[in-house]
Length: 107
Image 1 (cartoon, rainbow, N blue to C red):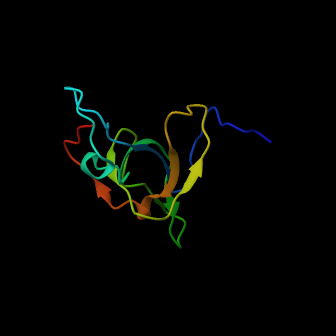
Image 2 (image 1 turned 90 degrees about the vertical axis):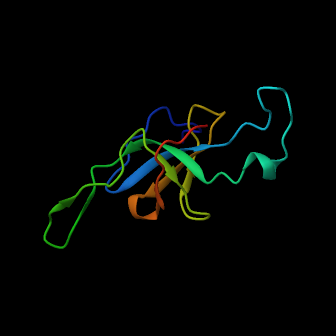
């Protein structure tokens, strides 16, 4: 059994998302509380997506997000994955579980 995954390609309508945790220290050196820093972990960057799911007739329904999108994540759902990069948290979601794409996201 592998303890860490080196690469991952999602299947069907699943998406690999890297959770974005805001910095708790400002550029000026001010330390922010978790609440002030917005450390609810509700945002993420899509790293990889599967090709999509199939409908009852067998037609491919492509995923509605793409790699590189910044997304709003649900409070629950998803499956955590231990990747080689131990500094970040990676989670697998179904395309339909992601709440939306965030335009102009800055972190």
